[in-house]
Amino acid sequence: MLERYFTKPETVDRIRGVWLGEPIERYVSWLTELDYSPRSICRRIPRLMHFGEFAWKRGARRWGELPGHVEDFVNDWCRSHGKHRKGKQAKQHVAAEAANPIWQMLELILPGCNANRHLRSSEPFVQQAPGFWLYLREERGLRPTSVDLYVHNLRRFEHYLATINLRELHALSPTVLSAFVINAAQALAKEALTGLCSHLRIFLSFLHRERLTPTDLSVSVDCPRVYRLSKLPRSILWEDIQRLLTTVERRTPIGKRDYAMLLLLITYGLRAREVAAMTLDSIDWKRERLQVPERKAGHSTAFPLSTIVGAAIVDYLQHGRPKSTERILFLCKTPPHRPVNWKVISERATLYLRKANIQVHRPGSHSLRHTCVQRLVDAQFSLKEIGDYVGHRHPKSTEIYTKVDIESLRSVALGEGEQIL
Image (cartoon, rainbow, N blue to C red; front, side, top):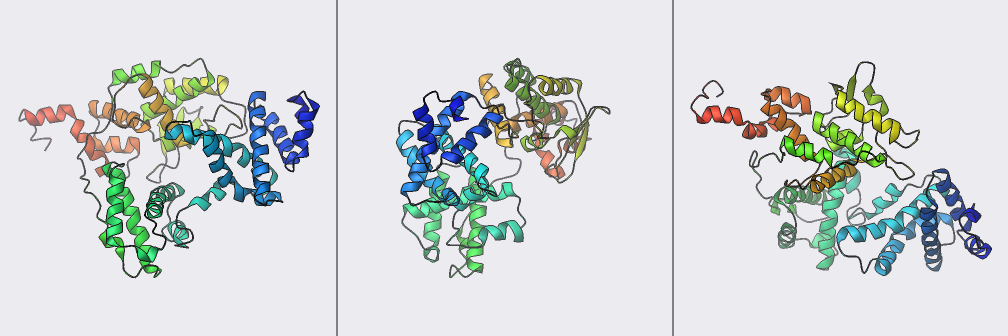
C-alpha cells in the first residue's frame, strides 16, 4: 500500500524499517479505505515516524506502551512547530495535527484503546484527590458534559497552584482560594466565574469529607451575585436571519449541511446538543414529523416537519452527506466522517453570524434559539406554549422573555395593563 503514495523504493524501505513500520502501513491502508486524500496521508506518515523515534528514545519497546508517550510527544511537537503560531486556536491546531494521527493509529492497532479514555489522565488532582471523579460520576450522577466542566475549571485551579508552587492540598487556605478567584475573575465573565466557584466549593467539600484538608474550606469561597432576569436574551432581528442564511454557500456539501443545521436551530429553537443528537430515524417522512430525543428536560418532542427544513435535509442527504453506516444525521465532511458534535454546530453558527457582520453578544447557536423564541413572543403565543415548544423544564426559564414582549409592555406603559397584571 505504501508504494501507492511513494515512488522511491528507498522511502518505502525506510518506513517499513522503523519499529512502527507495520502499524504505519496498516494505518495507511485504513486511511485509503476511508477515502483520505493522498496529500493528507503523506503528511501524516512523517509525524508517526517522529513519534515512534520519540517513544523509542524514552524506552518504549512494545506497542502497548505508546499511549503513555503521546502527551509528551505532542508537547514537544508544539514547542518545535508551534513557536511561531500566534493565538490559542493556532497552537491548538498544531497540537491536534500531531495528536490525531497518533491516536487514530493506536486505536487501530491496540484493542480497547480509546483516545478519550487516555485523555482522562489529564483530569486534575487525580493523584492528590483519588476518587473525586468517580464521586462526581457515580455518587452525584453527573452527565459527561457536566463532568467536562469540572475538568475545565479544576484544571485552571491546578495550574494556579502550580504557578504559586503549592503542591499539597492540605496547605490550602482561604487566602490562597481568594487569590485564585480574584485571578480567575480577570479572564472570566460573571456567569463563568460563578460556575467555577460552585465547582471549587464541591471539590473542597469532598476534600474535607475524605480528610484531605483539616477544615471545610468551601465556606470561604464567595460566588459573585448573579441576578435572575438581569439581562436581555441575545436574539437578533428576523431581517438579520435572512441575511445570515444568504451567507451559506449551499452549492458545497458543507454548505448544504450547515444550512440544514441552521434551519433547525432557527425554526424549532433547538439546542446545539439536540441537533447533534438527531439521527436518520428522527425524521418520519410519511407522517411529516420531526422527533427530537433526549432534550435537556429529559423528555422528547415531536414537531411538524417544516417544508423548508425538510427540503434542506433532503438536499443534504442526497448531495452532501458522506456515505456512511453511521445513523447520526449530520457528519463531518472529512474522513472518517464522524458525527458532528455540539461544539462544531455552535462554531458554525458563530462563523456565519460573523460572516454576515451581525453584531450580537456571545454569538453562537443559542443566539438563533433566542431569536426563535423572540419570534414566538412577537406572534403573541403564551409563555406556557413557548416553554413547551423550546423544551424548557420550568416556567421560570421562559420568564426572561417577558422583557422583550414589546406589545404587552406597551400596554402596561399606556395604563392598559390591568388585565395582563
